[in-house]
Image 1: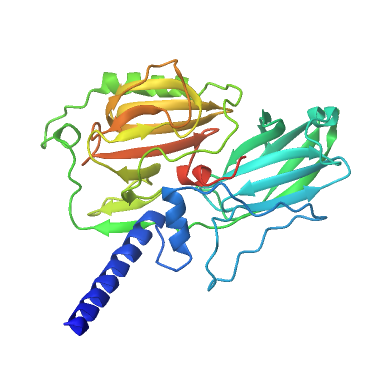
Image 2: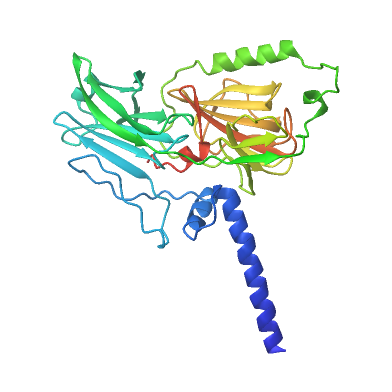
Length: 359
């Protein structure tokens, strides 16, 4: 009898391990490796730790641990650039397509409030980057476009008083293997979005109104409202679609998925991922009941397909505030939360900012 119980227990443990591995692969969007257990765990309960910063004489990237060793925490990489006038620190979960870079500027003595820093500004891809005070440090959040070509790009530090001179900080951007699938079945959508042949039930006027509202919202440019880390918007039961995933149905190529889909039951709570101002909280054509929160410096979080919104446009909310409930409104095939993140006009992976160490 004891022997029977031993083998029964062993079989249950093995089955549980298989389920765990599958769940980790769903959450992380990557083939299972032992070190991904902590990545999946972090999505459910993000750690606030980061490797100690180092002030080095040349740009560096902190080394990853050996592939066979289990990491103790999620790693943020940080590249440090020094000159006689400034120290620039660029941090990211990964320097890859679809990620977010967090940039901080210090003077050559390591101070963050020097008047000399006010003379400096940043350029990325020929575009001026807004610097805001975050925890009394001049900072910026720079999106790495998911369609950006792999290569090394210059982050320029310019002196406002010396237009002809600038320092170059090279940032190498690597490739992200975004998920792509093919299906021989037709995507099943609500009848509103898949009318019978010869019918056209599209409400073009409403779509136009929605587009105007979104355009107006994404033109706002406030100071940064937050000073702490970003949070998860809901309990992670399952990630049903990862960022920039492409699903091709029959012979039609699908569009890249502009966010992360988190499965949930209708009515499950949705929380603000960060402090900010509510710009949109209303039904939209494709997004269903839709919320857009402005976090400042052209950083916006997007929450789609809700069954209900619990906040008003113009309202200020805190990170972790209850803002709505999971649903299946708009172009949706089942209850879930589509979480999106837009920074300076580019859609990026929202998990990349949730796992980014800010404070």
